[in-house]
Length: 195
Image (cartoon, rainbow, N blue to C red; front, side):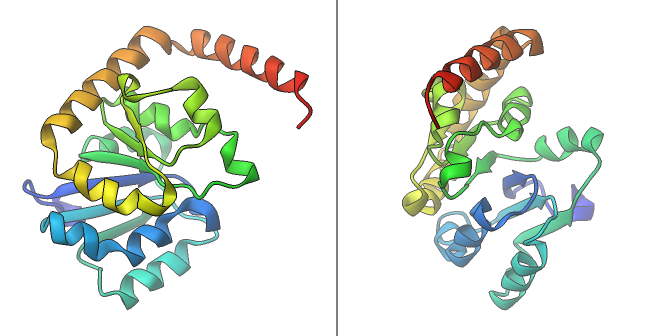
């Protein structure tokens, strides 16, 4: 952690995955002052690369957030849990569009399996599988995501409780066999509806 410039007192927000136009990272960086005003020692760790990596990187420089926002580019899959373990909250801040609305980003299961609380925009596909915070996840609309993130970051008790619930849920249900079965059922249902 120290080689990333993260210290023990830092509150850490984490995003893992490919950086697309719809990833919602720009929204967070543009409004990062809101988060800094609540949590002064805050780091935003972005593990991933992709088509929007350079754009996000130049926005971080332009906003002079180099000491707060850490971009690592892609990392090997086996190293991901090590990064997730540093997080206080893991996020899925996607803009909602036709593509994202019906998905369940696999990273959400990685976050939950590491016992970490998750804040996500309300993607229908994800809500179907994980309806409320008993599952270790809280949903926040895109427009108030940054406010909700800064409030959640400030509530250590809530974060701890969410992380524990998420881990319990994954252990009980997500044995991959169970997950595969429930996803197959969902896809069967989707096929019946004309998309």
